[in-house]
Length: 132
Image (cartoon, rainbow, N blue to C red; front, side, top):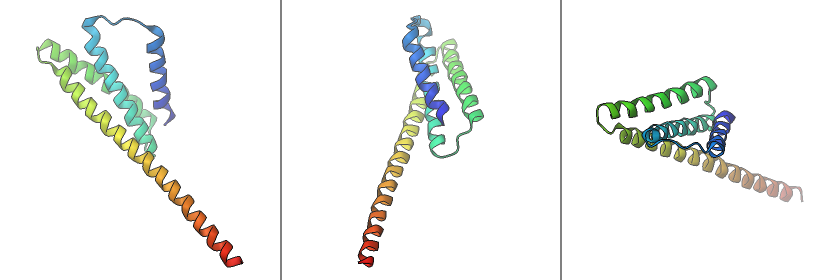
């Protein structure tokens, strides 16, 4: 579970430190690769929270998502169809789905812990009343 989070911060730090300009021709490809990578990281975090994270699945999914997204953007350029928009739409939808599931999981976990604390306080109050 820690690998996707570390990868996200490491990638962001490298991008900020390198400050390498991307030529306009490659801008779409870089944008699609970033979206695909972020989608994989969000999926990795979600699967980690669900207790289903596997490093091999995350790594292969990360690489293949980027390659497929890059290939579709390249193919769209070659056949003069803007497949970049389709890729961006699909990856954007997946990112928002993963983020909403992560939010829901964390919110449920937080509510459960508060409910558990409340129940413990009730039990302790009942125990102190019965001992008096």
